[in-house]
Image (cartoon, rainbow, N blue to C red; front, side, top):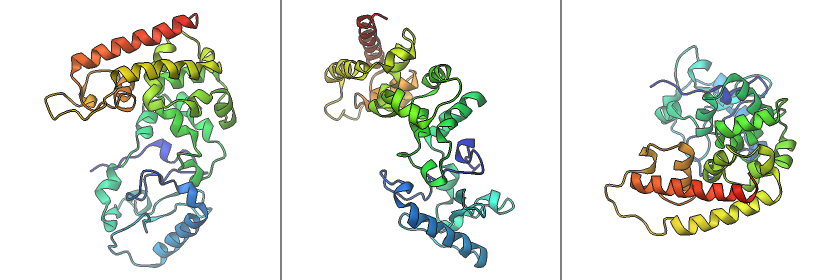
Amino acid sequence: MAAQFSYLCRPDDQKSCFACCPPIRPSHYDHADFKTTLRRQLWDNTISLRKSALKEKIITGYSCWGLGFLNQRGTQAGCLLHPAQNQGRDLRDLTGYGDKCRRELCREAVVFSELSAELGAFVLSLAAGLDCFDYSSRKHNPVFTLLNWGSTIIEHLSRAKPDGLTRKTFHEQYAFLAKELDPHRDAFALELMLERLPLQALQRPEFPIQYKKALAGFISRHEQTVSAPVNNQPYVHQLDLPLSFIHFLRHGLGRTRVLPSRAETMKNEFEEEVNRLIDEWGG
């Protein structure tokens, strides 16, 4: 199996992301919460692997003995069993999770791989000055948040801030993207709005309030309130619809399966709802 890798994983020699390591962890786990302990553990792993003969050792819990520092300065953390660290030999099977490690690639890395070099550099401007622990953190690294909004919204933001974006600016001037709205639920609506409105219009303080009110009404009429029976309805990811709307079906309406005709109807109705909201703002 070919290894998965993205420039997002290790953009420069000052930082790297190891958020997908180890492969056993709860959904809320964040490396930055354990920075002091982890730093010591990664150094211990690095020194141990340099001194000891390698042998199979199945990992358990939240710690992988193959995770360590990739350089002497301790600025980049990553897999010491990866082929890139072992003259082309892949040693990750020694942990018992080699196949999972080889296929691991986060959703944000997939989005990043689809961006132009210019947009990729714009997104990474948000991570300036972060170390590998904060860069690997969903809480401390807003790059992950921005990537989840998708390429369309990233393009609009880059045109508004052509000289780059700091974390302070992102959180203060674009709070609706940074923390007030959910990219998995709201990206489709924002893409529709930006077809008719400038990004600056969404920076108004009243925008999140009015949008959330309209959204709540739509969700109350269309959300999945009971589990759907197993039937011939396709899973939403199989539908030929924009990915951002598929995410809205899942994260906004709680639907995992729906008939294509019903999904198309809901999409049209939601577009009408958003357009009504834009008209109220004078768009």
